[in-house]
Every structure is written in C-alpha cells, then in structure tokens.
Length: 355
Image (cartoon, rainbow, N blue to C red; front, side, top):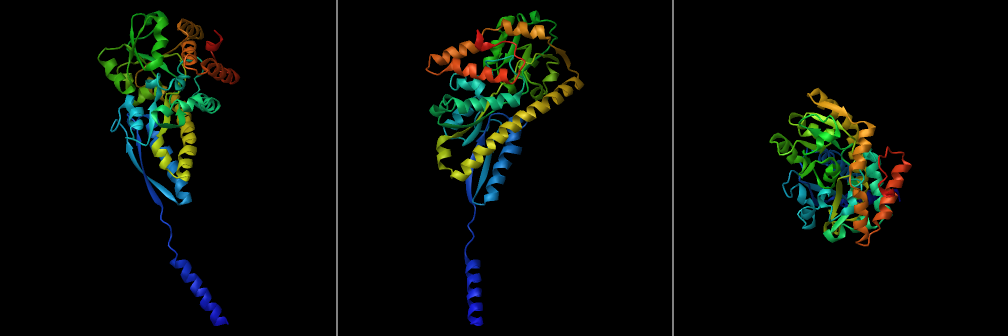
C-alpha cells in the first residue's frame, strides 16, 4: 500500500509539473500626443501612468502591454491628436481639448470660468465629478469614436508673461497676446488682440515680435525657456484650466479584455491626480526658477484682478447658452460647477452663473 501511495504521489506531482504555465498574452497599444516628453503631461504619462498599468497587469499575470509611444507629433500634431485617435492611428492619447471647443465644448468648462479657482487638484476632480453627474460629458466623445477616461489639469494657474513690464491693466491696450482657444477671450475687455497658437509656438512668436506677451503657466515657461524672450510675469491667477482629456479609440477599447480595460481606467484617475498634484507642486518652484533666470514678477492686486474679471465678456454665460441651443443643459451644468467651487471656498472674482 505504501508503495502504491508513493507511486500515486509521484504521478500527481509529475502531472502538476507537466501542466503548462499559461504565458502572458501581449497586447500592442499605441499612445500618442503632439507634444514632446518634456511637457509635464506627457512626462507623467511615460513615468507614472504606463508603469502603473503595467504593474497592475503584471500582478495578475494574464496580460502585458507592448507600448508604442509616439510623442512629439510623430503620428499627430498638437491640434490633430483627436483626429489621429478617431482614425485609429493611435489607440490611446492625450487630447488638448482647448483646440476642440466646438467638438467637445463641455471640456472647456474650467476655461470659460476664469478667476474662479487656481487649484488644479480641485478643478480636475470637479471636472470628473461633472462627467459622472452629467452624461452629456462622455456622450460628446462618441461621434469621434472615443471613450473618455479622465481629464487633466496640467497647470497651477494661467499667468501673463510679457516682453515689457505691465504697470497697469491699461498697458495691455493695443498689444498682441498669444493664447489658445477660449482664453483669448480674457483679453477683450483690456483692448488687447489675442493671437492663437500652441505652447510649442509661443517662444518663436515672442522672439520674433509677432506677439508681445503670452498667457502661460510657470512650469511651461521653465520647460520652454520663455524667460529668454518674455522676462516679465504678471501674476494674475487667471485660473487652473483643465485642458487635457485622456481618451481611447472605441474600436481599440472593445478589443481589450475586461482586465486590461480595468487597469487602464482605474489608473487613469491616479494619473489625473498625479498631473494636478505635480502641477501645484511644480508651479512655485518654476516661478522661483523664472526669477533666478532674471525674470521679474509683479503680483496683480485683488482690485486689479476684480477689474480684469469685470472687463471680460461673460464667456461662461455665452457658453451655457450655446449648449442650451443644442439641447444640452448648459446653465444647469455651469451652476453645478460654480456651486462646487463656492462650496470649496474658492476666491471667486466673478460669479459667472449669477448674471
């Protein structure tokens, strides 16, 4: 009996050893953006988001992703990432939504409410709360064959950087200022002319005199060496605008196993918080670097900030009304967002929904 039992044990062990170990299935995904890796949101995608997804999948042992990272416009330029994803040239990407105000207007909510909050962590989390509360946020991406994952607030607050010092708001009159999308409207009440552009183009526009200033945030100024061509910062705290969205091509998404979808979705939230937390942390350090590099900073007074806010057209009201015309509850969405900001005790200079 002992011999028989021993034989059975050896046979069972041999059978276990002979059982093939299931190899991880490799999934190929292409990630795209028109901006280079030195841009903070791309850097965090590379150094935080991808490793977080890989780690979760490795712990389960069923799948691994082979990443093809196509940054710096290898597949799509800054203004054409959405089109690249829609066409399937990329599977997942970072869409700069300020370039697509007419296509995904709800993503511009923080842009149409300047002088409300300079807290990127609060702004980005609130934007995703809005997307969960109002289905219109995610539905807006469907015509472009996209699955919305999260937003990205990659700047602590918009400031003004100019070639010459701004002693008073009246100094803006007649000047050309570079910006992107909706923030060009911030200039209307100051008599300045907005010149559209993207972050990668601002240095040359300033250097060649096409513009005399640009609306930027300190970290971007440090990354793109703006101090060399615009050494004067007007700290106006125009607001922490959420200008990025992470989306996935819907066809690519359908092909992914549920386990991989979960890893991508859950870690997108961590990536969002990483971006906004880093934006807040790096903002002060970037301003210090600006000063050390020879830059000069003037802090706009509360009275001047209030005057600037009052001078603007009510872009939030216009935005809400344009959505209402499309059957989207723009006024309700705007009020809900502003209520969240009031509840968070933000230093609001203009209550855009109350006019």
